[in-house]
Image (tube, rainbow, N blue to C red):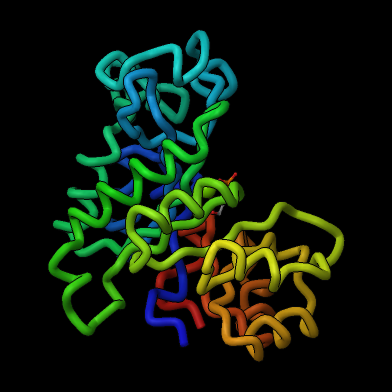
Length: 253
Ligand code: G3P
Ligand code: MG
């Protein structure tokens, strides 16, 4: 069973705000969302920050790589201007601050561990230990629905997270492929995943039914068409993230 929200704002506010920023979370909240996905990477000083691309030039117009800088340097960078003048000055958030803000606002988190080069295990450890500290009370309680779901394409990151905080739920992300890999279940078991996270075009109805019959949660990224979202839910998909929080509301069914 899937105790978490069904519709999740990708990177905080989808395409309506600069990805992975507090402005994006506020934007998601303004659209009624109380569930987000976001990406976490380590800065040079091993402090986790919220960002998607390792290469700062790729989208943000910066220079170098995330792990060329300490977190305090990254926190001075403007990652909002590219999304519009109204977002100018929006910084790269510290993961600790970002997660605390979400928790305070009652926003459920799918935390994608997105390691920079050679940092998979260290990133998994850092994310899991901070999340476990932040959710210590919930981890002692019976209600698991507020716990963040850790996900990653990197099995070693999830394995490291499991070593640090075995009780935090994990989802294994699979890259987009033409069809579901035949070894999906073995791969998910290797990291003790309770959920399988697939590109929605990888999935067909048979695959969806098999994953659900095997007892896993089933999450799809990134679904921007309401018709497709409806089909996925009919196949038994538990949840999906979307960039189109303006088209697909948090109560979409
Ligand atoms: O976690 C789902 C999705 O965010 C995975 O891909 O590249 O958007 O982080 P990406
Ligand atoms: Mg992501």
